[in-house]
Length: 115
Image (cartoon, rainbow, N blue to C red):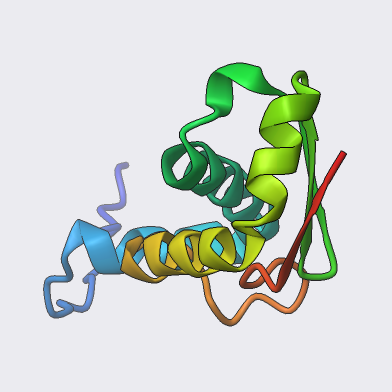
């Protein structure tokens, strides 16, 4: 004798959401926003400064971007432009939809230290 059971589960319909609004929520749920923000800051450095080819190391902590360059001449030239570079980098980050501005660990760039 067979007993027929109803296994159908009704799913509640939800309003459709764009993929652009779902991705930041998904990244926050996986705790990936700090790592993604750091990568975006490094990319913004290369775009704002134009010296990605001569950049050896990048490190970001506490609002300070530490940059190691392979050329001392380039380092001394960029030392005069650090305030302008900070503004350019932050402008690029503000325009980036995937950059999480409210992340308490990795936020906007406040200072650049050239090595």
